[in-house]
Length: 66
Length: 495
Image (cartoon, rainbow over all chains, first blue to last red; front, side):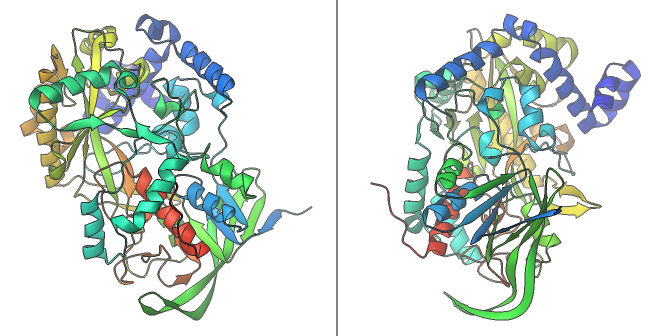
């Protein structure tokens, strides 16, 4: 996986992956996954994972769920 | 110091997902001594971060990157841990469609009908608090698709789900942070434990232990020969310690991919030539739409609405959505266009297309590695072409400014080739299929492996055909039926 991500960062590597459809798809997916998981970027897009988790924790405690 | 732990029990259940957890709880509550062996771990909801990359690595096999070999290669996400894939699925609950049960009777000789499964479904639905999603909880993403379906006059509805106290956190596939989703790891497994079942996590089963013989037993349809009798299982704990469980009954519920491999390693179930074959999937893809309104797709239940107008053609639309990282991963654009669309994430809507396949694949082991072979056939390719055209129609009718189909630039759905499709797949079934005839199936109608006494299968591998709907309820209902067969009791219908 790490090797695939590294390839996506180089023009020639990227061109190589484009020829291998599945690998290219996987590499792009992983790159996007990492980039938009950044809390700063995600918050600008209206998603706050910490707040979601905190609300879940509070609800579980209040309602005695596992 | 001993290098092996040995347990003795009435029943050993391998796997704690949709099938294993249910059968374990029902048997333990019926007074049987049960040991459950689960390869994954017990996940603490306090460790759920609502961040897809972390959760993919923790909750999924192969970090969620399990891939089929074939044309095209397909990502097949599988859950791992107490709850199995129910831990990471969308929670959608469909009963087995009657037309499927009719097919099972006609084609596979199975005596399983709507009436006999009814108490099983009732029991499971009560245990999992199954109810229909409300429009408020469904969120804006579902509202977009609903609007499109209404304008087109297409049949649609809100899905039934196994959730209680859901607030629409939007991360069903990445560990529910509120424990609202009633997966088997927090429902049936605790019930099993309260009834005395021993749950062993981090346990990898290497093989079933069998003795050869010619034990003959009389089953419903006459006399059959059982060439093997099970004695237990052998495996290994995560610590490296060997593990042996001695049991006269073993229920294999390791999932559609791994159950046939375990049976094959044990020399069981292979005589019909069907073991590991007949792999059915629901290949799926998804389209995005840029809307004028704020959608915030991750606010609400990701899979809350279905459009079944074309179900008879094997095409189903179901909601799908997630946080930005998830959306970015599946958005079918590249480079600057991808970045621009993601900058407008709050206005993006997404909906999924699932195909009830006629393609069939296989599972086998090669040098210790699992190989899943699956090629999409021409009929399924045509279903994707048609489905993508209609998906665009749906989203445009909903008012989309722009629709992003999962195809390369310039490729129209009607001309899409297999290699153009970007697919994921869900709901693997059929690799140890039930068939009343020993020459055609791996297990019989009671889910017992043909030719082997005391070995049963209770997971998706037993399901003999594609369902066209999400399979967790079918698997759980069959597991309930198996448990009460072994208990030799009628299934009580919940009041």
